Structures are given as C-alpha cells and as structure tokens.
Image 1 (cartoon, rainbow, N blue to C red):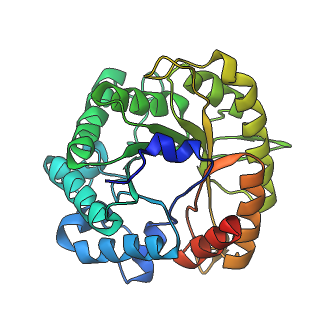
Image 2: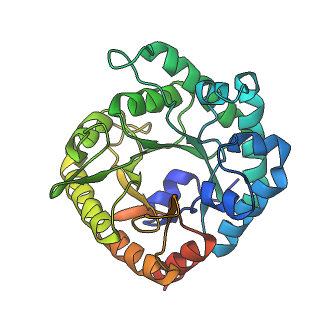
Length: 310
C-alpha cells in the first residue's frame, strides 16, 4: 500500500492520474465492442502493461479496468455472474503495477440504463448492484473510488451512495460535460451548479469532470467554474469521518482535445506537449487531481507530469 493514504496525498495539492484505457486497448489491437473488463481474466498481461506504462509516465494512481464491471453492463455480454471475479482480478493487476508507493482507484461507470421515471430501473436495485461492485473492489484492495463519466446526476449519486455504504475510503465523482451556449451541461442537461449542490451533501472527497466534447480552452473554463463554486461551497459541506469539515478537491480528466471524426472514427489530435501545457493551466485554476480521458496516452501523461513537477 502507498506510504501516505489517499486523502493525505490529495491534501498535498497534486495527484497525477492516468490516461485513457479504451483507446490504449485499441492501440494494442483489441477489437472495439468486446467486453474490455473481461480482459482482466482473459488477457491480464495487456491491462498490466497499460497500467505500468502510465506509472512509468509519472502517474501517482491508476483507475482499475472496471468501468463497465457492474452486473447490468456485464450482462449485455453475458458475464453478469462473473462480476465479482472480474472486479477482483482488475484490482490484482493494478496493485501489481502500483507496487507499494502508488495508488489504485476502483473505477465505477454508468449502467447504461435510466432510473425511474425516465426509465424502468429502481434506485434501490441499482444501488445494490453498485454496492456489490464496490464491495468486490474494496475487498481486493483499492485505495479509493471514482464514479466517472456519468451524465445523469441521480445515477451518479446512487453509485456514490453505494460506495459509501460499503466503506469509508475516499470517493471521487466526475460527470461528462458538453458546451451549452456560454455554459456547460451534461447530455442530460445537468449543470455544474446542480452537480455541486447534489454531491456536496454526500461528503465526496473530489468532484469534477472527465470526457465530454470540449476543446481544451473550454475544459479550462469548466475547471475555473468548478473551482469558484467549490470554494464557495466549502463552509456548507458535510463533515468528514474525522468530524472536521473537509474541502472538496477538484478533479479534471479531460479528453485529448475535441475529437474529430475521420473515416467514422473519433480521432484525438492534441499533441502530448499541448496537453501538458493545458493541464498545467487547469491545475493552476484549482484542479488537484489531474489526468486524461479518451485519446490520451502515456506520452500525454508524461508531458503533463513533467510540466507540473517542474
């Protein structure tokens, strides 16, 4: 396990996260559309290689390859009954890459279904599904959790609440934002203000954004808005486990720039140097936890880490 616990590391002012998993799998010849999470069992050496490449690039922490490892998402590939095994295997792989002084963050993504009344999914059923995933990740040895790439705030809250029902480890939450005029909202119309209002009462450790369809200058504007609102929110947030009020840190994990459609595929053309320069600005705007999402590579993370640590 890492020398400092994850909360102590965040309080130091900088936690460098990893970059994309999906695009790195495709770069290694994995076919799009398969169950990436099943690779934890069938091809663990590929996942281990990706984790190691990010640690070598300067990451302090990696996300487990469990974005779609809830029973609903796995069920679409007929692997629901393997959920516990898949999650535990993912942590084992990431832990092997992390060694004793770096961090493993359990990754929980959306189910792909809608909660009532928009859909048919009952909140309590979904919470139990996420709780089982969180329990598997916790028991396998993660240092904390990320609830990521959500577009609906109700489902994201259910996921965060499920994690908190299982353990007291740090919980981070990120939603995917797009441009909405001069402002930013998720695909489901959720504003930054709504996200902060809803999650501040849950006592999450970090809150922010990942993925989305923004340009880097827009990600910077989004970070500035989050930072300003989170700073205002601090006096009203829930008490931490120690009984002392804690500040919610800002987490930023943007894509490698705005994707361009080339021959039916999303291509990310932002150079690693430019990514590093933009992420330094986003960190200066207030983001403590920084990394990359779709289209980012170990080279992008290395450029960011070198820029920040200089």
